Length: 80
Image 1: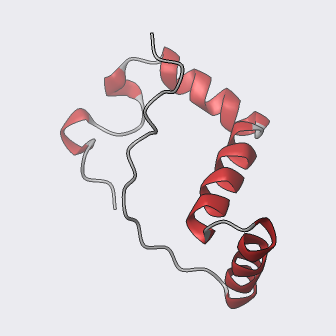
Image 2: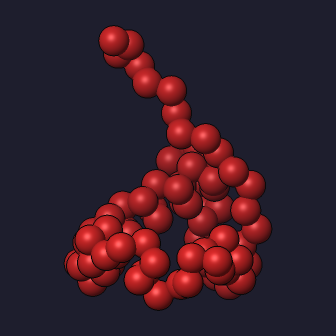
């Protein structure tokens, strides 16, 4: 078994940020000497993983049958 694992796939995504948030992201990325993409990924991963309401919601979603998750199965891939 390999010690170093393959990193997760990266996908391109377009987000609109408020100007002060964009400036903060760029400034923090310079502070830690890495890319803004890395900072955004890290911050989102940590923040969302610690949200207790999200954890409860996610557990309920994982325990529910796929057809009863709030999106009918024929529309599952068509979220806007």
